[in-house]
Length: 119
Image 1 (cartoon, one colour):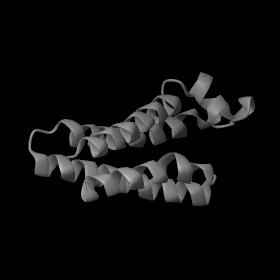
Image 2 (cartoon, helix red, strand yellow; image 1 turned 60 degrees about the horizontal axis):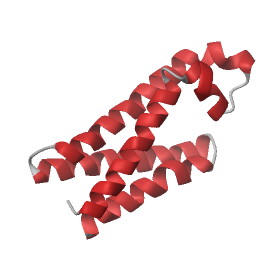
Image 3 (tube, helix red, strand yellow; image 1 turned 90 degrees about the vertical axis):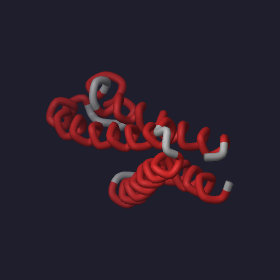
């Protein structure tokens, strides 16, 4: 994988590690603020957000495997799978939650995917 593609995949991976942390271990503090959750709803949403965060952790894991897997074909497969999942999740998030999700998740994933296949 070209170095520019690796950098973009790493960026998307870091974004999803951060989202994972916000939705799991940091939800009751920083996460709720970032997502604009009212204080009165933090406890009732904590379990669902933690579950959602776990999925973002799995996406980050696929991307990480795409960066470190020793077989280049398998690495490209992991990166492609992770990036496609992130892009689709971002589109869904933009439709169901807020348009900003499209720019935070889908745009970086699409750029990284383009780099993986075009560079």
